Length: 402
Ligand code: T4K
Image (cartoon, rainbow, N blue to C red; front, side):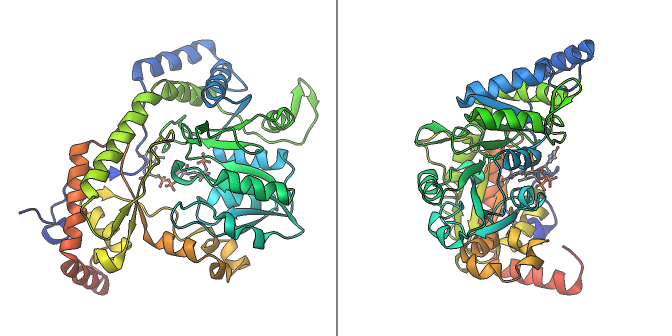
């Protein structure tokens, strides 16, 4: 009979299975591009690969402008500045810390709003009470690639004359009511970090249909240079390199296969976890375009038998390096924790979700057979809950493990 590594000491996998293992497109095409850029001796500063990447992204999304960036964090910072946000901006606390830092870095106060516990996205019903005379905008985050309630957010933004933008770091290849993410609000920002299903090693992009914002963004990401010896703006260095663009182009070429693999994995997880009580697998809306990159579970301790953190520890013993994203919420991280020690009082859904979420490995590094094994172990943790609880209690009190 199958057993748990926390009991037997024998992990299910010899090598660690990571969340966020990079997907790699066609290696031959990638190395051909590396050779091409080396032969060309043009490595950065709006080179041909960056231009090609921008055109590909703009065409794919169906948007007038794509400005490639060295990463999404700088992309957010520049888009926020180009859009003229000031004072206070409403954001969810349940997101990667970069969403909040991109504001705070330029002395704009992120005001944390609660999320809808079903969607994990900013809850439009919580927004209006957070608006003050200093509020200049809202940044929604399409968490896990599942779109925000864009219609409701747009109505609120219009009513209060606020700028609406989106952190679309997770949402390349996704849609809302049949329209591609990337086409909403004043601007949206994608991430092409190594851990994203389409990656450029490191990378990001600001996409917009606003000509003025695009022009400002382009200047700002290149020190404000409007031409040789002609600086017309205060700017920074947000440029994507040619080698990153080469990786990005090669990734996009494989997008159909990568979505297919992610969807296959998601369906396998759905099948294998259906019978496990106390585990909820976040669903993707099959009537929309989805990239299926994140496999997100919520653990209900009362039914499952152990806490989310105990499950993560058990999976680590199996060499399954599950992650508890975005714990404990931005409002519980510095500097926000010190600035607003009582923010949690207004963020009950955020606190609850952050304590329950665990993300499992997916992407090209994982296949349905491995998923079967991972899910089998998850089910076993629940059936052996009492043993697991007492083992973990012993190891933490004696300090011998974890
Ligand atoms: N907004 C949102 C909502 C975001 O989620 C993010 C980034 C941003 C904005 C900002 O985008 P960027 O400025 O990064 O473009 C990772 C990523 O670093 C980060 O990009 C991502 N979100 C976040 C959700 O995840 P960590 O702290 O999880 O990284 P790390 O080093 O722990 O790696 C995660 C997993 O991936 C590990 O299991 C190991 C594996 N991995 C990682 C790398 C870098 C690999 O197997 N190979 C690799 O090369 O932040």
